[in-house]
Image 1: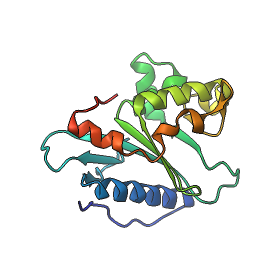
Image 2: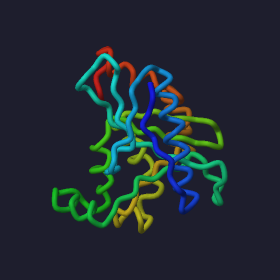
Image 3: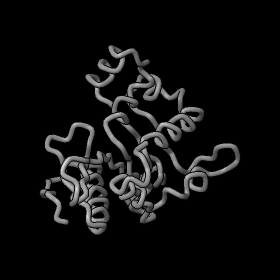
Image 4: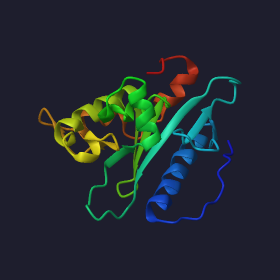
Length: 190
């Protein structure tokens, strides 16, 4: 199915990576016969996905990308960043500042982490994203940008209980099938 992606000018490398990784995901989802749209404006949801036989059911996706060239040489380290307005809203709703990222996770059904360097797309339900943040919090939770709620870390190259997260979550690597199953009713959204 055709997507509604428009060309953008890039003001920085992050913008270019974001555009490229969203296109990678859109092409993959479209190749599965799904209808993919970019909501405008983007308010925490990068892509809306529908099955051509479903008028109403939509899946909301956030794409996180890492480019081919990283100064810190971390190609599977992703972040959820929040704005001041989002942090204030999170606190007002009863969350701690360091949990402000949860409001952004709640907007989506899936997060897709794209590592351009390794040609990987990690397709995670939001419940798994929460697990990954919790694991990363043990290592990075005392960083000032994490304590202040400005961001949450999701580094897939760390170990948890002696196992790299890339091994622990290997079933999610390039597994777009879990999204298509949401439309067939074989698996509930998480």
